[in-house]
Length: 585
Image (cartoon, rainbow, N blue to C red; front, side, top):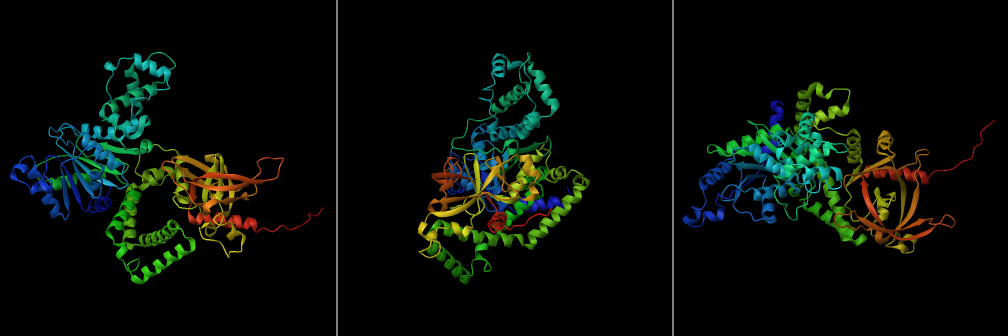
């Protein structure tokens, strides 16, 4: 990449760092520094700690030091997370042999919602070995135990085999496996592994046994599972990383970027920061990653709360407070009122960020530079291949999944509202619907005067929803530009849902009565739910009637403009006028 790109990486990922947290059992923390000389003598590297602290201060980076970590100390990890750069000693024990504590810290940082930049600073002679230890423990989904369960022939073969004569996979092959799964291992390497297993007989899945051997080698590096730690691996894309014998060693895993750097005695901070920058450049963050990082920097640097053009002006605060009280008075629902105010504030911030001239200038320069650098690589007839090159990835991808995820991102958002609203997609078993009542009809406030039918039903709300059909992914994508489908992704499951009839392009509306004005209930690990009564024909020989109270699960939510479009088209369906004509002979 060019100097413009290198400078952009440094600006957003390195220059954006504003504080440092040093974690090393050989360093005295600030409390220890004010104790006796005898206490200070216990710390073997107090001079190194002082030098690092002093150099970071010269770079205007506030610095904290910690020298103890107890297993399961979540509060300490939370303190670390609040710093932009964490410099972590890989062996947090007196003998410099045990990596259990540092591995747990890295696992917890990877699972945090904050993006953490970590330098693993180590005396280890073999940085590749450190890389493999960290990667194996961040890929806890590559466990060996239980992998062959359910594969009787392969399990019987494995139990009878003697692994002593098998060649251990090379570090390069292990890295390929941990970053890309078995599909990420080169064809030649897979062939060599299978050949080395000396598998005889038919009816045995050789690829499965090759993966089992790789998993067993990963498992040998894995520490005992960390308690109360939930991981979302994200499949084979959960971990990226690379090492070169005389170059950068780095891992990017979920919420963590880790640079592995060998300790040296002279110019340590310069050595650390240049090593971090080199690792980031080797990672090659793409344009979107750079842009998101720069947006995050802008959010953290600017005091939006103190900007008189936004929220700090007292008259604006009085106005927003009046809006909040009005919402409370009308609805009587504090959660919904707060949600409404937050929506308004976030929308204001969104417009402020998107119109920031410096951010636009930064993005424009970087994109121009990347396009020029990639040249013909993004000008082929295959537009998705061009996109892969622009995304800086060599991983194989499924075009159908890519386009489905793109359409889902453009048209839907995560549902987290206190009440269902226009565009909410919900289900009961294999049946799906989308709310097409105006959002103002689904609030907690009473509708109209006390004498109206709608008001007399309060807090039950009459609601219109259109029936959706679950269809084939490929078919929904083929007709995506017609705007007849909803592309919902929920917990990695795809829901291609047809909104309008394929022949008539008309919606199929149904009537519901929501209880408690469509209030949603959230249970961790499950879909949000709401209760409603549906009008349906349960017996084809009888008239339709109210079906008993049911609990429906929320699958997803259309973005506001997409939901408004469906609402408009459904309204046009109700407003249609039938007229009579006769065709001539």
